[in-house]
Image (cartoon, rainbow, N blue to C red; front, side, top):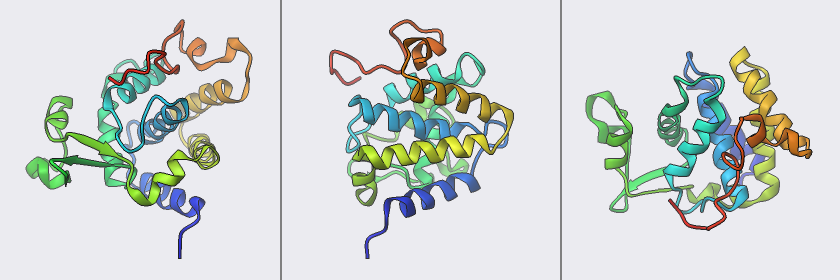
Length: 193
């Protein structure tokens, strides 16, 4: 029997809730939200995720309030693979914590990048990530997760909510982040980086 999308999101979000950083609770939900937005914009292919746009967007999201944490988006991105959000692979073999030795996690972005050649949404989740309706449900649930958490999470939720639900240009996320034409817009060239 196939699981309903909300059940799949529930499994993912329960895993995220159990394994969040105490010092930066917005990391994993923020990273998930960023990936959902990039897929919605057509800037990411769920079957071949590129890390660079995700890290840039994560940086844009958190840099104004948390500049010391903005460049560390690779950390939640890696850890979300352990929650089942996506799969890292190298030469068609899954990359797991065991690939990083005793630490069981990458120590740097460079070490992470050296260990994979592909990142993809796993098959059972693919239809939900590509569905506008199901991605919107995920984003609403992530906003609820932010709202029920610490002040840092609520600050990010307020910014995201304004950008999503108020269509006036002054509330677009790129304007809220202090960017002009940067941040949460798809690359008009269509070139993947």
